[in-house]
Image (cartoon, rainbow, N blue to C red; front, side, top):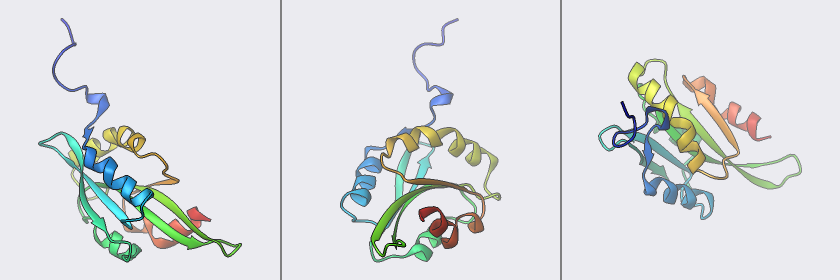
Length: 145
C-alpha cells in the first residue's frame, strides 16, 4: 500500500493564500494596516485574509473584530514609547482559540498554526489566547517592554 500521491498530508495543515503574505507585508513594511485577521477557509483548505484594520484603529477595535466563539489567527502592529522615550513597534501573532469554539475548529487551527506562522517573517511575539483576558492590552504592553 502506497501513501504517495494525491490528498493532503494531515500534518502539513492548511495551505496559505498569497493574499495573506501580501497583506502581512503591507502591515509590516508599509504600515497600511493596524491589524490583519486570518481565518481558515475549510472549503479551499487554506488560510485567507478575513479582515484588516486601518492604521487609525486601536487595540479595542482589533479585539472587537475577533469572533467570540470561533478560532482565528491575527497579527497586530503595536506602537508604543519605550523607557528611553523612543517610538517603537512590535508585531504580535495571536492564535485566538476561544474555549467555546468547536473542537474541530480548535484542532484545525492548532495543527495549522506553525506552518502558517512560518510564512510571516518578522513576528516579534506570539500569544495563544482562549479568552479575552489572555490577550488584553496590559498583556501586550508587558510583552512589548
